[in-house]
Picture 1 (cartoon, rainbow, N blue to C red):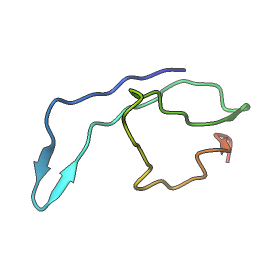
Picture 2: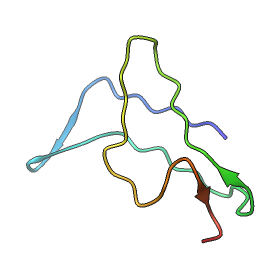
Picture 3: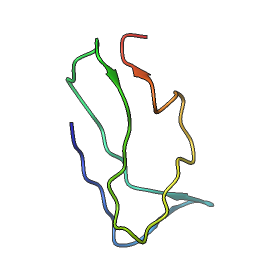
Picture 4: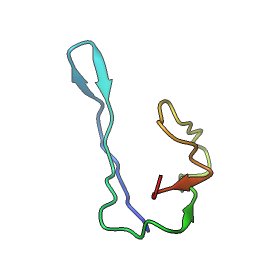
Length: 61
C-alpha cells in the first residue's frame, strides 16, 4: 500500500506547524505491516509522533 504526500510549503496553524497527512482506508486488518519512507537519497526523515510501533503495525489491535 502506497501513499505519496508532499507539500511545497509548511502550513502554519496557530503556533504549530502541521505537515501533510496520508490516510490509508479499507486495508486488510490481519497482516503485520511496517512503515517505510521512500525519500530522496540526501533527505533525513524521522517520526515525530506516533501512537504505535511503526515497525510492527497490527491493525486488529
